[in-house]
Length: 210
Image (cartoon, rainbow, N blue to C red; front, side, top):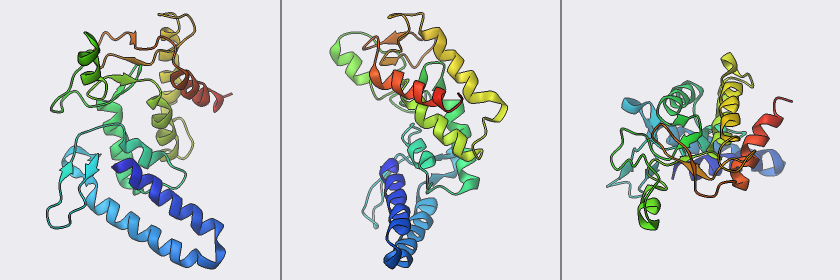
């Protein structure tokens, strides 16, 4: 999974800083990971990172679905993604995944996309990771955006997104942000009507601007 590669690279860079006597070896491993990652995971025709890659070097399977998991690779303090690639990936996430309620779990033009979180338990479970929007993922998106643009909120984009969340706070449970929402418009908050990780991530990003 792409997010595990991002976390692994970040861990190696942290160890490089924490263990002076083995700094050179951790630096070597980190560079090897980064080089391999950017060769294997970037899908140029989609301007996106592969979501998951099989580990058989002779029959490598690739899931190139556009999903938000790739943003974890961008948002780490030490990013495994090359700078020129990171901006392209971020643009794709903005165009395909970002909604006023957070980020879709799958892009609308991908196979298997389910844009409405509705119906019985089985129907909702099928949609959960196949297009349903998750507010808590906005935190990772904002981290990635600010890292790519060197800590600057270019064109006030992140603040604009935060204002969209204010609208949700008048829906469902007042001053709350729901667990999930539909991937399709017009979306509405669904699942748990006030979810700790949704509220927490939005508050965390708000705190960066106050």
